[in-house]
Length: 202
Figure (cartoon, rainbow, N blue to C red):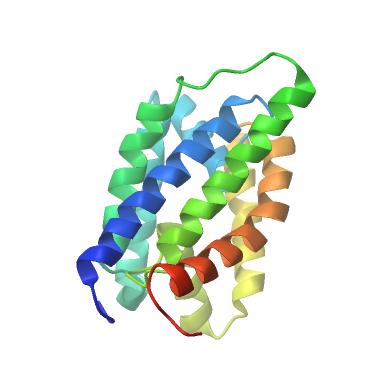
């Protein structure tokens, strides 16, 4: 792991994992479908009788295994730590949120969840301790084959959502909002974390 204070970086990974898990469960529970990858988790959970956390862990394990076989440079300690903490807390946070039953208010809670998910993801991403499981697959395919990462991600998102829907996952407003809003928030959160919590100059 490059850079100073590896223990501090791993603590930020764990914190980011917790914030992301809380955010994604808040967003999904509002009843407007799932985020891009969460659609697949929902489908896997319903098809195989798993909890959402177990489904997320199973999907991530397959993605990590693929990345290790295809381009192991993408995987590091933070990848595993993030997924373990995230998977456990998705189950812990599922069902604890309260909703109003009013569409506008619940949509606002969904958006708050998306923002929290993205903030936590940016916090983790800033630590440079290994890519997330989904990102590892994207960059493995991109860097090994010389394909543009953006196009690989778009194709991956489409494939993940399509498979999730086929397995019974819910496509809805949350899916679209996650795809549109999470990127800028992740970028902002990662930049702020690097400057304020990791002391980076860039």
